[in-house]
Length: 400
Image (cartoon, rainbow, N blue to C red; front, side, top):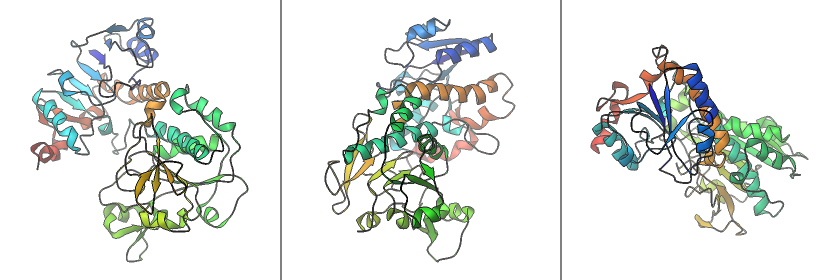
């Protein structure tokens, strides 16, 4: 079995990699019959020499491998026929720009696995970078608040060595008695909470958050039961909300009246009600100053997220009365942080965490006959056709 580690080509500034040198050396140690080849890269967070020093082959070409691992979608001209690939594709969301990619995977007879489709027997995702995105998003939001109100200046996350450096910078701050509200229950939320807990920001109940004043910063974390209500006024549960999202509307406004910083770590669902509306932002009682849209910007859930921002320019201002983008320092602007590739800002941490997840859940499946069915469930294309589980993508391919 020959494994190839791909040089990132979609985003030439992406320094992440699927496995660290130490992790690849460990795979070779555990599985003697595995051959590993790493494509050479000038920008990757781990240098070519770091791989070579641990006995990993580095080459400008890796066309003789069986399985290829990358982070981002691979430009179609670099896809090698009759091979197997793992990467994030955006195919599952049926994004227009990914249709040609799926068509090419089929045309080139490629077996393809998206990291999003690697799930356990209970359909829980095994691979994801949401927690790391939450960590960076939390730091960026606090940094944005300091810049907006000229209270403190934090360095950009991308200039720091990792999570611990981010937290150490935050620990040096003396924050005013801010209120932070977090929506979502996934790993992105856990990343945000890890940062807030590390800098001793107290978590409080929803009731206390909404009704009490504090002399120190506090936060609350809420799920869909807390910021949505049925239009008919009936009580509901999780199952009803996810089965009938069109029957609901947001009542997040009660949080906008007391919150300074809002973290959205909620994944988009079809016809899900908008969480933060323009009407809420226009309300004279709205106190929100910074919105950090962390996991899936520009999905319609957050009215002030007009576009994704970039690592180079992570912040922009939103003027509710005009519903348009303005300078961050505009006196009426709410600051928006909507970077859609936050984990690129911590390439070393992200690469090591990603590699650990693959080593725990995916690599063993190659050597135990896939006894848990992880690879079988995850395979989207095989021998030039969609697998049965993903046959619903046929209309996407056909342009219907």
